[in-house]
Length: 73
Image 1 (cartoon, rainbow, N blue to C red):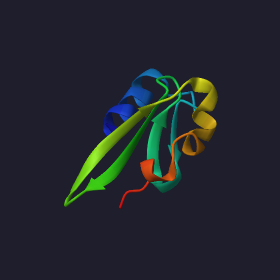
Image 2: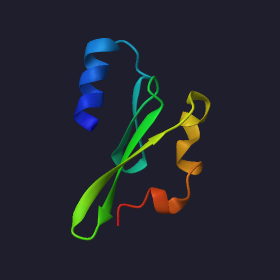
Image 3: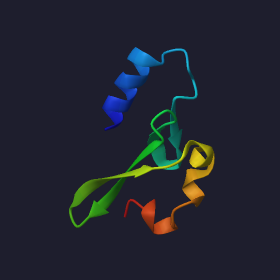
Image 4: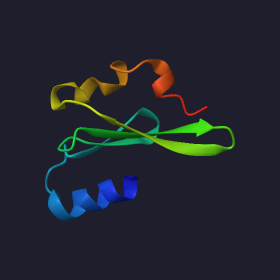
């Protein structure tokens, strides 16, 4: 997912520095899509945990979901 977000940014929005961003722990997000992609541990595997937010909360998305949603374990 992160690679797709990076490629999308590079091809569609190369001059828009706010389109692709990273939250704490390197969690990628797209302002235009309202998408944040987190990874969490599930047993001995990592799972992708995408979250979709309204644009007006993306600058504070970390506080919208409970802390458990952001833990990688």
